[in-house]
Amino acid sequence: MCRNITELRGLQPPATDDEITAAAAQFVRKVTGIGKPNPSVAPKIDDAVHQIAHIMRDLLGELPERRGEPTTVPPLRRPQVRARLGLAPFEG
View (cartoon, rainbow, N blue to C red):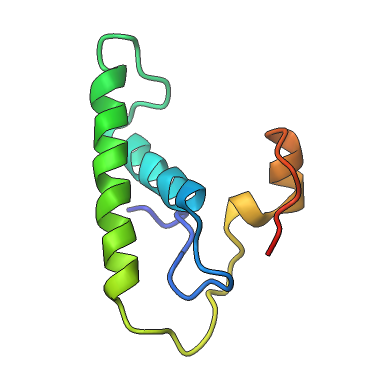
């Protein structure tokens, strides 16, 4: 189902809170089919994203080390994505 969500386990440096939250948001958008929630459901969507991000932070912290890094670079580490979002270059 969520083929395009980037693997975060095994990244060097480890996944940031922003990367984990972005992956959680992508998951919630995919599962719900809601890309831009209206004001009546936005708080529920935000709550789900934060809960999933919290669970993922805990899980990533408890999993064993990978033998190598993931084959894809997370979007928030890509210069063109960071430029489009108006973010400073990734400091890794």
